[in-house]
Image 1 (tube, rainbow, N blue to C red):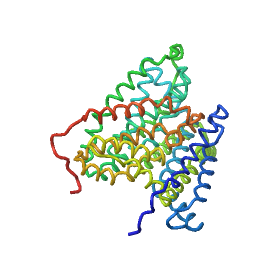
Image 2 (cartoon, rainbow, N blue to C red; image 1 turned 45 degrees about the horizontal axis):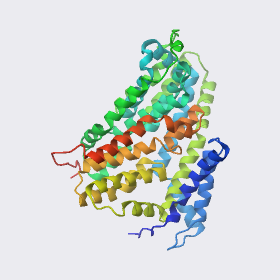
Image 3 (cartoon, rainbow, N blue to C red; image 1 turned 90 degrees about the vertical axis):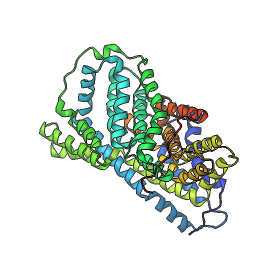
Image 4 (cartoon, rainbow, N blue to C red; image 1 turned 180 degrees about the vertical axis):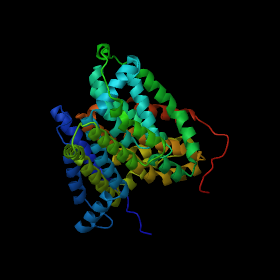
Length: 438
């Protein structure tokens, strides 16, 4: 087996450079959209290619090969496909009026005081059913934007609500990649991890919904009832139904796109030619996102080759001597990896084996370590402005990703409640954890 590269702080500097470029440019110009995210990632990728491993020097060809393999990872390619399909879904649903019809339905039947909490609950429900935060954000963000415009609340607030709901489902869903990664690396059953996880995050979800009820809304915006066509809402209803049936996110988006096209053609809203143009337009919206996903995969691969990820792991786990310290170390490790890689699944997969060893050493229930891995990675994933979730949502809303972070209340709250869970040792387990594959 190939020996892992020696740890090196230099290996973590590409992501630090990216953060410096984006945040530094924003602070200098008082405008955080000054530095385009894609440009910052290209510059960071170029810098990463200039670095090298101290112990075993890599040639330029070898570094390019590592970069390309990282960018071509199956998770990254799947993410790119989801981005493209999501863009097409946005465009066709917006062009046929599905978003406006859904908003009008909500304004007619949902009490004004519950519209924002309702948006959060809907996003939670869809994300839990679909098992993907990205699919939820792509489907629900247009609805959130429409509600924000109708209710007179900031668009970043509505989008932050959607992101919060999406991270709720990503963290808890039985078919989420983060759930699968957390349970498999820790060797626990899906339902056991779900129960432990839910006890920690449910108070955060309830508190989020309660806080949203106190957000000031322009009541006059919902006095006038607008007509809506239920057929136009069909694509969203089909997406929810398919998600409940456990259809893969690619299939879910495919059904959504297909149904939106059929409705648009049957209603005479667009012709075959304009339908194709709408699909192309939506995919075009996501071209930057696809490029960013590929760049992130390549940069992370080089960081591993240079020993940057190993350096991060080593320094976070240093000095752990107690059970509670191991739990805090677990939280810090997976959080740091998520911040560094902007990918919660990668963070869990990378830290999972280390955390399992820590759990055995300090006798931590694996259901607990699985929950902590998932909660902290999803919490920070819902906050980092360069993560796929915020980038996709910001692209749809036409705002800076940094403008969304302050409104992502649920991700903030689950981090708070998870820290409290470590401090109090709650929840506890009387029975022994069982692994489905043992």
